[in-house]
Length: 176
Image (cartoon, rainbow, N blue to C red):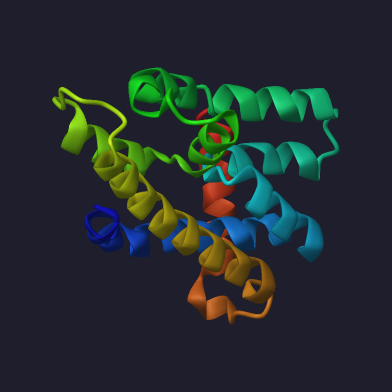
């Protein structure tokens, strides 16, 4: 089941990586230091929240405003958690926190598509599939995001990464 999850998520890894790369470049482009940007990528693990809060951090907005913005952008995860509760409720608190941290939009969609009609919930097969998708998602995001953080400022301007990062920030500004 884990391998099935990996296979299901692998075709999406390139798109995840592109988004992560752009987000990494945007973090450094917004003036965030490399260590702080890496820490943010590893702890927050939510590209939409990272991009939504970057302009606020760049202009020195009060932290409660930054936190509220991240919370509002990620409210969809409350829906994900409610929809997935019966699959994970038997896990320990620590295991549920890990699953919650690793859960992402695409993994949630793949998991629900595969198991929404399952009569038994929380089986080892279901958890294996979930973790297979989640690990591919996490690795693709972190590798690309950290690459964007470390290499984004070094990339030739002809690659258009600065433009992509700016457009990502503008897109987030226009949707709020």
